[in-house]
Length: 136
Image (cartoon, rainbow, N blue to C red; front, top):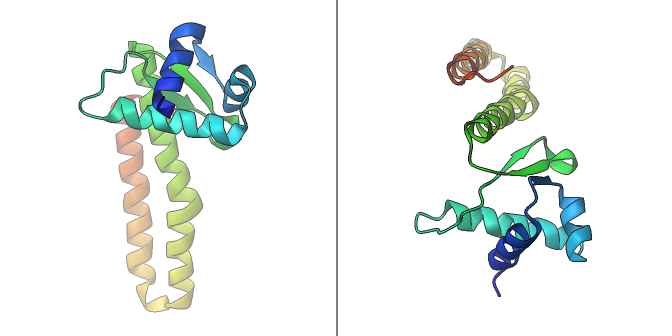
């Protein structure tokens, strides 16, 4: 049985509305690493253009605090979109902007370009978040 099939069987039999990696591992009697692999395999399956997945997973939160939700309602779509926008915001503020700012310190001649780029990215992020109704 493929990992995605194991996950699908769990979703079909347990019918969870939401779960964490820890709770999935506990329910199935597997390690957290294996639970993560099951989730990732199912996500790959659900995203395949030829997928027959009936359960749609999406995440709220990050890393160990992530909660996986099962559903395909308007609310689920809003949650997925808000989480995506939050992921972009975190990536910008924790990785992209600090790396660009470090480049500016090492090479002061690119300071104007870096400042313009960071400001443009932040402004565009705000526009996108407003357009999809995500909270900053």
